[in-house]
Length: 332
Image (cartoon, rainbow, N blue to C red; front, side, top):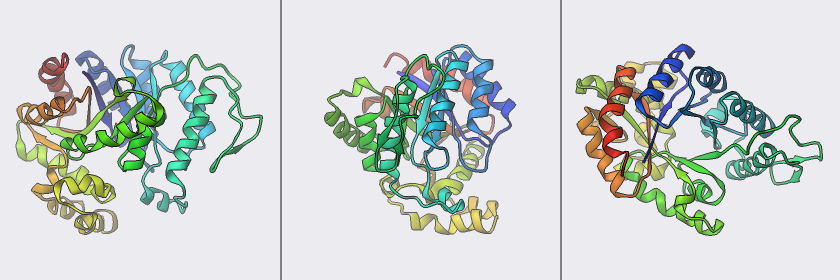
């Protein structure tokens, strides 16, 4: 069993350095940072983390080929891999349609754009010419890195929809499927297996991370309040495939979205998050966390990725998972 941490890119850079060092000491295998629009740059954060750690793998979750050209994604990936001594994993996907609207960008051919980008990036980080005529990329013979990549950088595909989940199995080295709630893994895996069948690979050939949200604290109310903030901010953007696991729809989140993103009333938005919505993640003590994780292990999960908010005290949460969760599940 592997273990990783995922962070939003909304904290001071120095905090990530402390958390990454704590994660490395606690036995985590990977440390991921998102690159959501108008927050701090994940690539800068990961550069700082790479310089402050020596063992733990680092990764972006996610970069997208709409706001960053695939050639630049390849440049960033290879440079971060060089800086970290071969510890960088590229997390890539299409991003959220709403974020593209913020920029006045068309969200066209999202899956094709991601698959075209992956094909090109794989060639570039393999020191090959990436010239191609694809649906979303028309590159000339000049499409190659002007410095040497030490290896092809592993690519992890972020996914929520069935087609993107299939693409994990078809083209990626690993996957970052969002499991909201955690038990959603049972519905995710058949889609991934369809992609694997097309590529002639087995599940053991890829690193499929079960990505969950959790908030750890002995104070149940404090743990739930932290998780409610994340749900209020992101809930409306979750795919129907995820929400239907809890008999929720995107329409259920519309008043919350309006309160948070339009009115700027975060307290009111937080108060509208229901107990049913809180089941999207896990909030409470380590025992509560382990109870939900036991089901994942039974479903065949071999990599659990703990995502934000982690808890009111992030360092305490990292240490609690390291001391009480990882040892119990490591040998599964």
